[in-house]
Image (tube, rainbow, N blue to C red; front, side):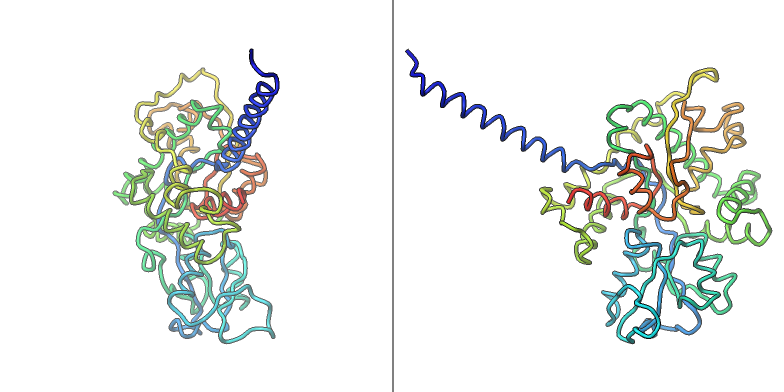
Length: 384
């Protein structure tokens, strides 16, 4: 006969074990990233620009630089450059009258406004994505490019396509279709750039100019064309690119911008976090993803993107009806040909990747085009 007290003790032990298991499962789920990186969008394509009062890095002391915000790769690259290549510290600008010549100051400014800040003398330089660097040096007397970011970090990661994790889990077919459309659009860009005499090339420059500057003037087309030469478009994700994301994580750790490091959150390493963040299956299956019939229903998805950022040209291409028709999809965009209806997210377009991540975390968008660094920084800090 089983002793009653022994039986009760056994049941209690099982309940304790089960409770611990549920707690550990909840903790594991809490550590799951709230986004999934699906594809690369571009690499490189940013620059540090300065006024003619600056000739070398020794002139940076006491000067004010604009960045798109702490979560951006531009801010990260400038902060790391100051820390590793100069004897200055890097700090938020306290305003005139409180500055030291031993400090390089930064202030948050959206790239589209940096030209006016330079013209007004509010900043001495900055770091931005294209086409705004090319715009600034063509519009601000004395402004020049101090360094393109690929001179600091060759082939550094930049914009990515990401999806809300919950959306991916419940709508994998829609995610596959979206990625397939993105791959077709990016391939069109990569092929079009090879022939600058084609009608497609001229049209690409026009839509980039209108998106970035609001018009298709000769001057703005020239700026857009010049800026395209500094951007590398690609959708592929390989191990080398994943390694670069590990470098981003290690740089953020060194700069002290994580509330808790990945290891403190329970990840084994930077590589472990990257593997949990990135899913390459959708790219692998993109070429075999079929288009839909012209009368088929479309899946509406909420998408966020950055204001005027031609790094994210693939989104423009995939939403352009003329390009879709040229590819043989009839009176449809590339997205529509794959069954996707794009709806801009609340607050779209966004000033920087940090705001795109805010929209992700608030469940206001399903997909987003944003920089890989803000995706990583805000993801980790949201889990802290």
